Length: 339
Ligand code: ATP
Ligand code: MG
Image (cartoon, rainbow, N blue to C red; front, side, top):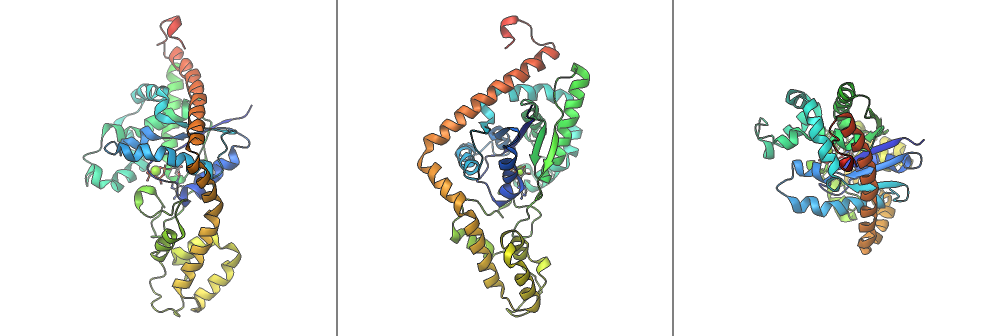
């Protein structure tokens, strides 16, 4: 029996290199040997974008196209839309009884995100909503509604997964063995840093190179990257290990890495040329993905069909799990209401 995988992405913007190297490349490999469910988490995206429904709406199909262009194969994996599976919301309600508010506030991922979202939640987080603070609970429902056993994620998600395991253990202790306890699966690039030196490239952080970016856009972003601050003139020697351009060369210029490192240290390489080389390599790397994107953009009905069929399959699985949940919680009152 193949194990189930559940992982998700918020439709808050297009996919960037962090998603691809940190998560989606992994999904592409895993779909060969697991039952994969990939969720477009629109309900979760609305927790901090409730006032911008157009953004979330637009990005559902954009993210679907990004996933398909990156190699997610709808014949092997299920791609579905979270809000179209009401069982997830239902399960969230029951899970919410098993989590204290204090525990949610202590979750390191939630803490970091509240700090990052000062404009929305206030400087001290005094404006945090019930929906946002509760998103780890709904994420636990996302995973368990599909009997998720393995969850491939970036390392920013680990505390959320720990919280999910706590909920599952509590649920199973109270209501009897019902839900599977998921394990995380980290890629070998659990966190891609931003070109701006931020610890994470993120959609909401304004530092992302998107899979659909044109060469000009990539150029603009790479030209602003943080380099060794001690290098003033073109031929000053520098330390590549403190340079974000070199950090990216390590990923996209593997064949020339030794030369790049040596020339940088000897002051034989100006930052502008060094950046141009990186732009070229990232552009070449993204070309096949962008060609596939073009196909899906030209054929939106293909994308719609994939999403509708995926959501139908996901729905069937969530219904099966919910039946078990209701039975064990003793809230399955009538025969006809049991499915
Ligand atoms: P947002 O800022 O809206 O939360 P995000 O860029 O964090 O967007 P998510 O949709 O929250 O993207 O994350 C989807 C998945 O991609 C998660 O598993 C997350 O860990 C992973 N991920 C996101 N950014 C990176 C990154 N820079 N490096 C590695 N993995 C990443
Ligand atoms: Mg995120």
